[in-house]
Length: 515
Image (cartoon, rainbow, N blue to C red; front, side):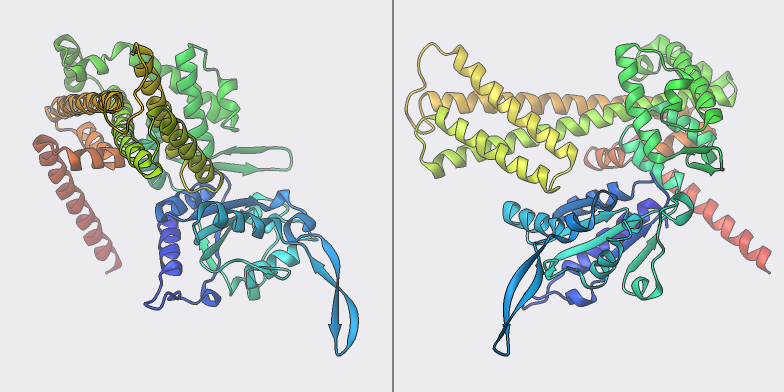
């Protein structure tokens, strides 16, 4: 199973395990809710999909890497308790609460979320003293006398034995109590994620032509060579930052992320070639409607060899991907600003705070406390946390800028007088943002249609690659769902027909071979 399908399987399992009947009990009794166990090579995204699945289901998330734990930290410390049995007092060994179970209870208490996902990474690499307790936890969901609360899904992940010498194999009795999912590296499954995250165009372009380089793992007695999905994505972030700072990208730098010397040198050379093409192929100007740039790109499409056309396609996809990401972020930010202003008004009325200055301070403090809880317990993704922090900062900035421009005091009234003026001022700023967003939406539609029209003139394989990659990007699909383009939809339907026809031909050929 690839990582995309594994994520869907985790989400489906969470939905099934947390579904309740009409009496409020769980449809699947906790006893029959098998813990999830993902086994797959390192760096393919097992940890990331767990956090994403919990966020998608709106439940709590607690994560632990078990190789960092000793038996005492995971299970708790022993202490002596006095008990009376048949009239005789005895000393009995008890244990303090497990740090892991305590973290789950903290999440329930602080967030008010009764259901969640407890994720234990590196589960099959625990120390010898902790291994029996972990097996008991997987089988019975208990550490000593402390049980994982009902409503919390237990999931674990580990690496196969060939990737880690310290791996311990589970016995059949344990495996028979787990929901076992084996995950494999798959570039085709990772590519839509990479397009959505706007992974550097040079990386996607390179991997499209060198798919076997996406995941490499070779071990000998003297050398370990590896390149993983995590390494490619982290390298992408660094490339963007190095370009902003105008720092050189060398094979040694690439080799710090891709630990295969031949691959690091090969990609480094390809990256330099990609950047050189970026300077001579005026993709941004062409998409913006510049006629001279359009003529240059049209000449490449009609006269250049296929590899040059590929550079043009990937440069277009990279530029449009960045624009789509900025557009999606701006749309989310506009919605956050509107929601925050509405919540501020309700907060001032509910708390009966007369002066807006006091209401604003208390409101921002409350929102930041809620945000801290959501961050601590994984109830929001890193992107959602950052965007909410930005929204709170902008609200506070608008408030202080308005006060600084006033010559007098804000009158002690509730949403009237100066308070009303301030609310209107902030709401006007939100409306201006929404107007700018609408203009950017129209502009992005025009740019995309220019790119489609240019490549449609040749109607060659580069056009098919561009269309399939564009609509493989979840951000593009969401954008065109909300902002339909007749031109793009026309070619998208044709692409779907071509794809179905190709699949049907392959199926018929396979049937003929079997006969």
